[in-house]
Image (cartoon, rainbow, N blue to C red; front, side, top):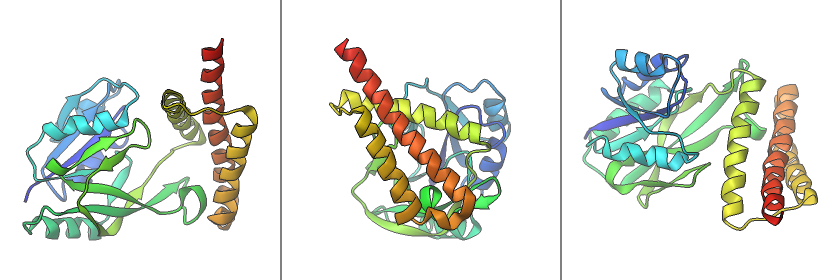
Length: 251
């Protein structure tokens, strides 16, 4: 069976060459869905043998992922972010799957996050499992932010894991959080969700408690505290943005 690996990009020149080389361990068909890079992302991607397609960014992550589905005829697709890398064990397992003739499964893989040279095991950035590999004709994506696949195949787990090298700085984290909170607030308002100042604070407090205590963020030391504190701030911000939209509508 054949595989296409899909990478969504926007100004990823620092990552694009390495992620393409990493993806090529599984397949030669690598598709870049670019949303308007102004750096050398597209140039480097094409130079390194990837196919590049452009789709204007409209605050809809699911639409970006769905856009790629008719750009290939591969049997399976695998989505990987520009700041992620497949480990050798995962690569070998993917090759074994492709050697078979079975379209009845979708695959999740564990993802481990590293920032500032620290790999997190608890709290906000604890290892998680993400669905990434699907029969191409059996999946669609839904949700503008924190998008999720709609695929009814049985789920299996890939061996190994994804290395996730996210957030090169606190500024980068805040920049991404600001984008995600805006998209979330707009979608929540459109879907009829409402809040208050007290609600924003309570949601943020509950989020901090969950991440720092229930998910043991304190075991990651000071970085664990910092990331949980950021989670408090970012959760409160998305609800305050929702409140802002409510007030504009009322006015």
